[in-house]
Length: 242
Image (tube, rainbow, N blue to C red; front, side, top):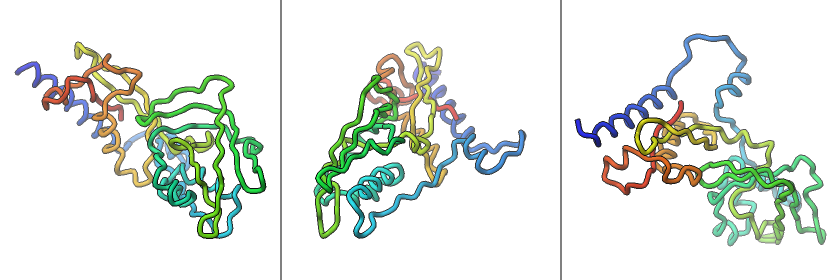
């Protein structure tokens, strides 16, 4: 068996083990209530987004937009002007802020809404967590305007805003990548969106693996799958913890 074949076999075995783990059903252990079990398993959370209501105030539009971003970017776009909805790129990154003190929102000029809140962390487009520097704040002027007789946001944030109390819409997952010598696995923790359907978890995880490690690991790890397929030698895959 060639070295390349052995590398592929090791990678495929790891992925198969992951998929089997994700699909397995517990056969022993204590009985827990539905809510408690969902919290422990990290099951998907159904947090339906609400469309903007006719006649909503500027403050309500901003609140609805931030809440909608946690579960549906399609619904969140409805709170934006037509042009802003086209230009907004929520996948760029996620900024997590502390909005427990509602005074972080200020209405100026009778209609404009400004957010000035403590910044908690950011998640990049791969789900890598980065703590904010102490004292860092999130400052944003939403620039509320009227469109078709309704208040709408003309200047959305770069990426997505997430209030820290809604962080449970993400789940922590560990991706594992091979060391250059293929003699050990290196874990990398990422935050991935919870799926309400539940059936797409394995697909989401495999896609995260194929996208490769984040900047935190960079070229310190490698992949067997992409090398076998003749792709770029840069490490971009590994295995997943169930």
